[in-house]
Length: 215
Image (cartoon, rainbow, N blue to C red; front, top):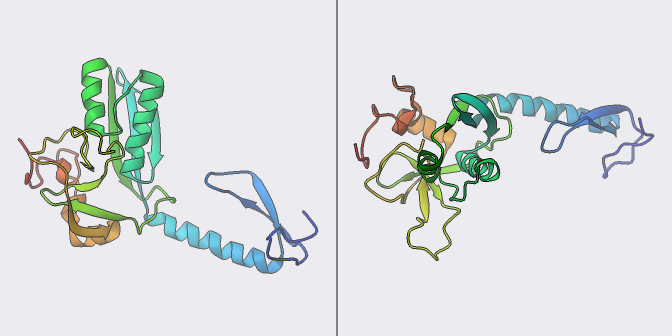
């Protein structure tokens, strides 16, 4: 333990050594005074409580039915980008970070590989519950900006649907004026989060409204 508190705004005598992490679990420690240790304890308690209701997106890659890669991400967009990066590094994928493009590429290049992106609740403490999600104007999927869009190619859409990659749409993704956090959407549209008998959630399921879909 050091002689003085390592809070840069404090010069009080050190009283306790506490574990700290930045971005990921760590074995680093810091010396804190009595007052700063109390504030630290409040923060830890708050983090543990608020982390209990968060969501996570899981990415899994299987080769011949054997899972070779799995990772959790705070949102669907990050998960899809990470999946594209993984396939680019290990499987020579050169396409955009778009789940539909990834699935098409897999069907054409490696029938032994399969990918899944699934939504789980109550696992991830890092996600920001205040993040806003916008519903498509023409269907019940959320939409997001397409990172591959730069205006130079008319074949690259400006927006993408957040979906499981198995949906066929009769329209391009277009944001509506309906934007809320996930918790707000959960209250307003619980059907978007319902798990159906086919195991799929909300609009990814054939049991959900087929508005904007090609069956």
